[in-house]
Image (cartoon, rainbow, N blue to C red; front, side, top):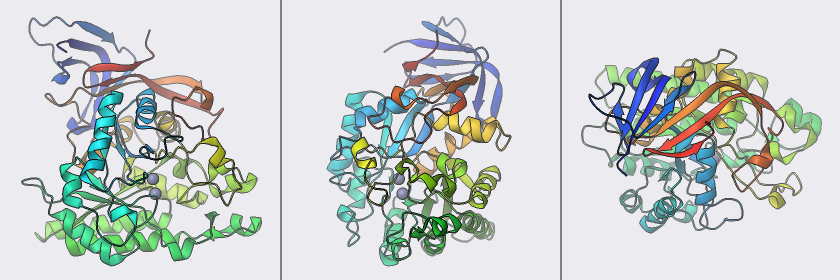
Length: 445
Ligand SMILES: [Zn+2]
Ligand SMILES: [Zn+2]
């Protein structure tokens, strides 16, 4: 591969460098060259991006690829194909596979399968506990050696505060030179004693429907626990799929506390939070039909929670947008409501839903939205992506910001179709996905 690409005349938005202007972008040999035309260089290929947005390649740090073990739902090849169809150039994949990603060999398997598929980058996340059994820590050191960039038992919480404390102490030791924080622990916040038997948010709607609910405090209590443990250990904690107003408030206060410690020159800690499109678009009112495509964990909450999540995205408390892409084969989602698995697919609707529901109504500016899909998740994971700085891998997403289209689940590349947005009108989509300098997806003529 020895080619030079010129992406001409686009609106280049790179929040990592505070860039938002009409300019060219040069790629060479799989790396970013820069914005200015190098003297005498003639591109092998020119892409006209007039009227389009040129962004660092989007990162989705919360994806369930299901392989190994549940290939009927998704594989590393089909999940990464869905990623590039959606404009995503890198995913971090969750370890709740069968068997779980809890050893060096398991992390290496994911990276090998991703290389074979040759779609986008895949960063494996390692399990916190062996076999996700909640009894003893997984081989954290071996997982890091195998390429794991963070740790979680997502799909389930780390219920033991003692194990969580030790996970934070241990991951804190994996600090890059000069970095204050080690590898991140990603938190699925749920006190299981409080959610047992629940199928939706606990509140007015669950009472009306006469079904058992999952209270918001089941999430808030664990978020608070893990902020306190992060302070104790100097750890790096990222809260996945925040769904409650209380959770947003706790993270905001935790960040203020961390900033105060830093100012005082004391050992500080990392606390960040993530929002998924369904938690700022949908509410528990959608459950009245008992359609399993609206069943998630954490569940869809109330309009007040949605407003608090949007406020948290606006003021930066929630620094990451991610999908929690959770494919399930149709026969599983068509079970009885209380038996059906949680979650929806998200990779192919991620960008248009965020444009339509965050940028169009004026909640976020384009640079604010792109920051939460590029450099911010890269910082949580500690990976050198999400930027157009010269010398970095040439991962670029080209976006048509105004095209109007309709979501059609039958056109999905993902193996699964569990998605409540079929037929929804949306604005904007990725028109080209460039990974390591190669055009992996193009809708440009
Ligand atoms: Zn989760
Ligand atoms: Zn998840």
